[in-house]
Structures are given as structure tokens and as C-alpha cells.
Length: 265
Image (cartoon, rainbow, N blue to C red; front, side, top):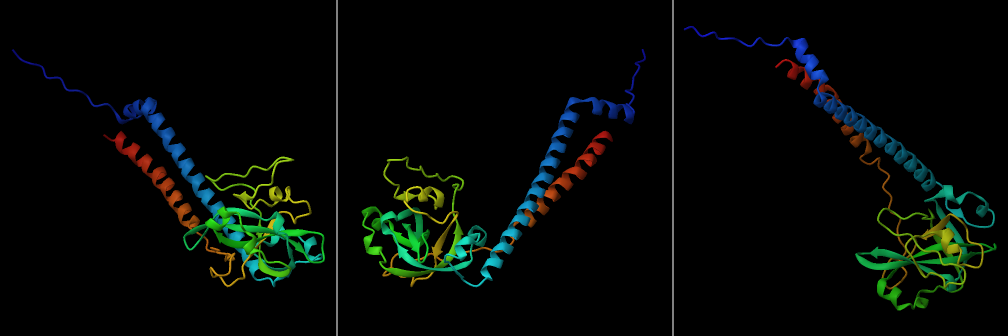
């Protein structure tokens, strides 16, 4: 008795292709690949946007650093100080320690403390500007006795213009603004000039404050002025952009090759 052995005829390549194209898995995988490529390209473009923002920031800061010191008086107060961040400024006047506040969570040589923000009544004007006079230790802040850091009489302050902080950084808290009739807030998380000005009974220069930079920087002369630290490099944004574009290219080229090889099986 003879036994008939039947062989399975292989499917043509075009039929395998049709089967593959109509399969749900293929379309789902292809959709994921296209979405991933689009996301990677968008992330690369975002990094290029960040690079342009960084370059614009660096150019703005370098332009201000190259300017001569600004003498803050009745004439220069009419200029747009918000656009002069990091420019050196010199101002004369008298401090108002009755409306002084503290800026929380400031460090000096790994020691916790606060910075003192004090209104300076500008000589020859009816306005005042907040001065970040520098760091004091946390224990002095907690004691509530800040009078030993007072500088009575007319003073000359040299520092840099800084923009006010209106929004907290990620993970940090904003400050409650005391309502009418409530006691003023003595310690703040942000140098929010507009909010602090609401508890001061005279005009405060808006949008900016001065970060004092001159001082001998020793513990014997508190508060200790902070030095401005600037990173004017372009950062890692270009490298990150190239990485995202490379990942998108690898996926865009590699996936069709993978599909073609699978069809050839």
C-alpha cells in the first residue's frame, strides 16, 4: 500500500504581504513607531528652541554686563529697569528697617540662613527700592532680633538689578499675601516685589530689586552680600537635540528594514 506524501505549497510573497498589512499587530506597531518618531522630532525641536532662548539670555546678560554702572536717581527711575537685569547699579538713600523682611532658605558655606530684603528710600525721590542686603545665619533670623544688622543714616549701595520672582520654581511654594488688617508677612519664599510692596505704605519700584554685591564677605560683617553666579554657556541643548534627531532617524530607517526582513521569511 503506497502512502501519498503531500507537500505544503509556500505562499507567494505578495500574499504574505497582504496578510501582514491587514494584521492588527502590524498597524498597531506601525502607529506606535510613527508616534515615537514624531515625539522624538518634537523633543529635538524643543531642545533647539531652548538653545535659542539660552543664546538670547546670554546675549542680553552680556550686553548689560558691558554697560557702565547705572546711577539710580529720579532720572534713571524713568527707564525700563526690568530690561536691565544684571546691570551694575549704584544708589544712595536711607534704609527703612521697620518694613524689612527676610527671604527664606538661603545658604552660605553650607550654612542655612536667610537674606534680608530692606526698602531703601532713594535720595532725591519719593520712591524706594528693595535691596537684598545679604545673608544672615538661621539662628539670628529665628531670634527675631535683626536690629544689630541695621545700617542707619545715608548709605551708598552697589549691586546688580534683578527681576522680581513672581512664580515659585518647581517643587517650591508661593507666599500668601496678607489680607487687609492682617499683620505683615516677615518671611518670604520669593522675592516677589509686587506682593511685598502691598504691605509697605509708600511707593516701591516695581518688577525689580537690587542684589547688593559689595562687602567684605566675612562673618564679622553681617549681612554677607551674595555674589552673582552666571552660567553663560550654551548648555547641553544642542547635544540633546542631535540625540533626539538621531533616535528618530534610527527608528525611521530601522523599522522599514525590519518589516522587509520579516516579509522575506
